Length: 397
Ligand SMILES: Cc1cc2nc3c(=O)[nH]c(=O)nc-3n(C[C@H](O)[C@H](O)[C@H](O)COP(=O)(O)OP(=O)(O)OC[C@H]3O[C@@H](n4cnc5c(N)ncnc54)[C@H](O)[C@@H]3O)c2cc1C
Image (tube, rainbow, N blue to C red):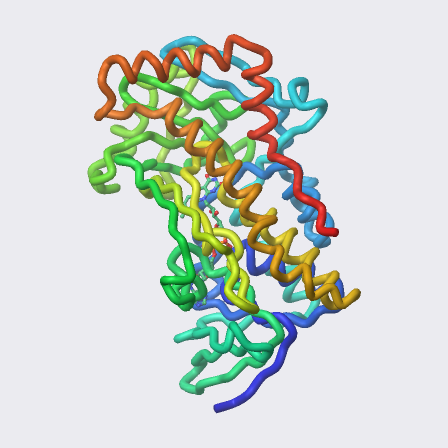
């Protein structure tokens, strides 16, 4: 077995692993990233696109903000459409100047990959059978296979940035973790198309036929979503059926101005709320989707990954520079305070905007009335806005 050594072994080269790797590398802390897939596969995944201000600032801090600043679309608000009624949420006015930036996760990943390559920091792609060991000891290590050889990577700490289906969380004994989960009885069918956006801001539409979201990646590329039954297959949805259904769920004026075109990607994502506690086991830390999942309605998944990265980075910085070993045990509790608030907001947005077939007529009216109450009051709109732009990151002291 060949032996390698690094300070922080990172499992997974998604946005969490790459961003953590970049921040640590810039701070002079050695990292090695192990990724199961080839780079093209990682870049081919079409996922999130709304970046909170905290994440935008963190990307700038990591030195990868140039293209985002040049090409990202700064949005000062979004719209809610409720069975024909349109309500504008003025993020900037309601939050004292905060905004969100539309810049695809694929582009964030591409920028981070390029920065890592330029910095000469190592990522081993197509690493098989990655397994963390000795997490409860002062000498943890990770084993993996590459090109027919087995390697042992010795390290000080392991960051499990390997997503919901990764190995890090699954390597923690089940009786050391508490799982909180809710699976929703529907999914989101998403398509990507090279068409101009139907509206300059995102539109979240609640309709008796189900939820719809009009989103975008650039002035010429759109991302639209429809709530569909959990058991639906992509093959059930021709482009034409998708566009017809989307039009039926949008206010008339918007539907009339919708430009349609061939889809360049089409997929169905299940909706799930999931949190595991604690987010650490000895010297291994769970980051991003490895520890929690939110339904995408609040645009929080990628942004939560970024706030976990910020917390772990700031703790490790103080550990290496100031010997603050006491901070290590704080990682989970700091992250979870913010994670649960984002879980609540994502659950609330999902509950308010989707059609729940199992709801009786009374529950239906209560939910309509709750949403109307929030939208008709400035305090309610403020609450939505401050959650949407992202709650502040906790300082590590
Ligand atoms: C279909 C879909 C749509 C989404 N849409 C939105 C959205 O609109 N808005 C939003 O905010 N969020 C969205 N999300 C969530 C968002 O994309 C995630 O929160 C984000 O990708 C989390 O980043 P991560 O780095 O923690 O995990 P991931 O992006 O999952 O990265 C984990 C990485 O680890 C690698 N890996 C896994 N197992 C191993 C292993 N055993 N060994 C080595 N490497 C491994 C994986 O290949 C992957 O590259 C969506 C997610 C999905 C799946």
